[in-house]
Length: 373
Figure 1 (cartoon, helix red, strand yellow):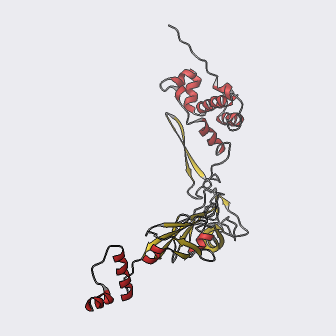
Figure 2: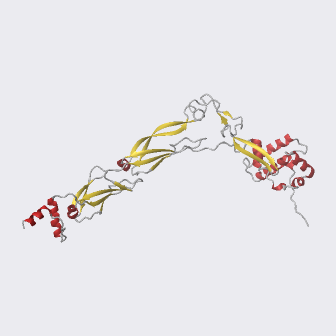
């Protein structure tokens, strides 16, 4: 039976030090090589594999017990009982971080945060919603403090490096176990991830760097908006944190009802009342519009209640362009409830001519005729 083994590079040779090198010498050697081969700095082929090798070598030679076992038995002394090849050493990025206070791309800071959104409500008349209007609204929002320009410090002073995290914005605690090295990273509780603290707070914002302000904004309401419509004004919300973008302002629109018109999307609806004579004989009606004057509408004879007539282009302008809706005129038959004697007699005669006599009250004239024979 035979075994195939893969020879591993000597750890001392990987770091370029002698077997009698002191701990400080080993540390300096690793620091130099880590800067040279870290994947964030070196994109050449093989750089990452080389960095893993030197990280593994430093992990062993920086630990007195592991170094002693390695010096006495070589790699076999490390493999015994725990499978050295499977150990991650906490990740080669953790070793680099432990030396240089962060990855090669820079120290970790609080991420940029988008500012909050704001809401404003506008009440429009029916006509303003139909044809558009420019309105001024008052908005209360969070802005950068004008006195300290957002720094939080009184003019003439500046934030100081946080002594707890040394400006990193985070604190790290390294621990070792049988499974390798672990680095616990947490946001600095003193500076809250800023990396700096305000020692002389601004008198205006009390060190917050932001303040609440009331602003007057001109809002151009387009033609065709409806009750419940919402407009978004990008960037008119609260100022962002850590250089993040500002939030948005959402304008909610309410529309007052009209006295004579109802609305159905881009169409207007008008109820035209007509009496039985008009419905039967036909007539010409003057229909009110949202424009300057009324529109003439010929209602033909025999029009039934509920019939709808359309006057083209007299409705609401379409919100995204493309003309206007229509004015829909809905005929509604109004049956009179308070008739004079003459009107009642005439209606009786009309009913008899249709062959459908009412057979009820004939009216005063009918009663006199019957009385006189």
